[in-house]
Length: 367
Image (cartoon, rainbow, N blue to C red; front, side, top):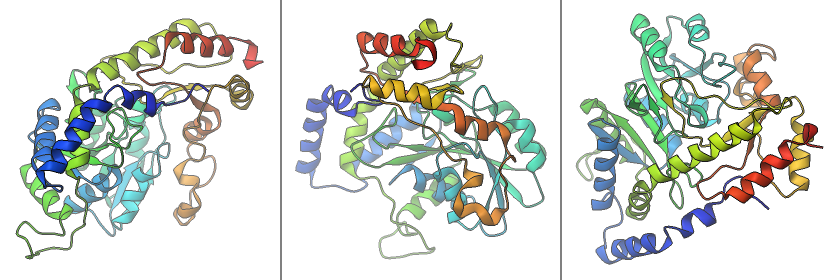
């Protein structure tokens, strides 16, 4: 089987380095919010050209804590995309605010700024653009809308570590940005983890307090917080992988260009595009086809794994029935949920494996 993502193969390449770092952590006797976490936060802040980086337990917590630290809550609305992983909207609901959806661009799959503006009301407090699959959203237009209406912008960059927008790192383009270190992410660990980046010092102070039970002095609490801390073991692993991220992302981009080169003439599939002045890091390589089920079935028959991202738009999820959205409200997002699917993409895909995938895709309709 050619896997969609091959974490075993990827982590084998850094296994020895990781084991050495784990041994150092064990010997240190310091396992929570220690020197490795501090080093990781410092290096990520420097890499993303921000002043602050606050690590947390996972990417969802990054979103939840950021929203709460920014004072968003009950009665507030936050605009985001219906075509993303559930956590983007779940985090809004978790702090008592209401997710408001806007449709997406059919080429980039990211929030359509022209549709965002239609959804803004007096209750709107923030926009959460998702840099889906590693392609940066239309941040100039989104930030312009935010300035016009006095809104906050929180980047959901969970799939986009290493992407750039007009030469600027994703993670430095809004009031704050949230990343996930889930194992399948471009920069991942052997478990859960996340980080929030910002150049707002006051926000970072609030986030550090929130992640540790609402305290900065042990046993003295001035607000209700969370237990959302990145441990030293994951920080140590991430420091190893951080040294590899440019190489890994470059390899993803190389595989993406080969896919595009050899599949460009296939009439039955639509390939992903990369917008001008943006660096897409292809967390997933998703192609579009009205023959999706047929093609996926053919790939499976040839031991090629695929995945559907995402089969049900967020506005149509059972849990959001109370928001009174209907099928047809967001036609672009809904068409993507019916036609888009991912094919294998990871740094240690081989050329022969990719050639085999391409050869199956080039057959008429996958037959």
